[in-house]
Image (cartoon, rainbow, N blue to C red; front, side):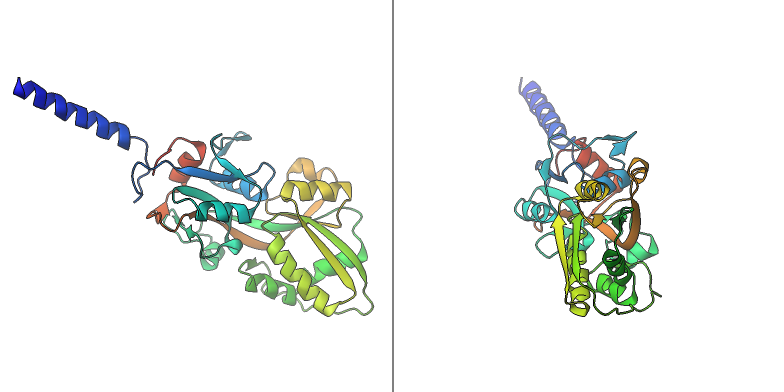
Length: 283
């Protein structure tokens, strides 16, 4: 009888351990803690790029887990992950701060050098979007963005300049008016820096920046509600067919972030896909 009881206890322990450990990651997590997935809203350029690059989008279907917490902006993702030790999210590398921890992806750190070298797998473009009603003042602002001065501002903000041999900006006298810019919350911080630098040269120009998300910014550009759109993803063919164009002004990495208390340092692209589709639910 004692032998039967002992065998039963051993079997119970084995099944319990299998149940607790059968749906976790292979990283150095805390073990058994439920993962809180934090994602961006539909229409976000960051989300669009992330789900495509990580294999979460399949045949134009976004397979992000329905249990994900949806955040409407980069800052909310950071705040949510910083306040939840079991959370994981993704943000623009340019928006990364020390309140959260960026993990390696496929063994590669999210750095400017690694993105330039093409070794970090989660990178995307920053675009300005224009329509066929582009006015001369907005054209001049775009010229500044693509000048050596504008590309220097981009690099100083932590993004990746796309033209290291850009020409100097040619200052014009008498420029005045207002430029309405709207779109990606990821592009907005560097766009604000560009706007400030441009206004320092052209003090009679006002630049209004609205953070509405890439999708909304593209739509506003198509409708003529803004002079210049911001997008953190490539334009779709059906959007281009509506008379708009995209110009890449910078490159950016998407940092996969976890709480600073989380011991995970590195995840593979496949592990990230499994987490964000809900196939893996525990650290």
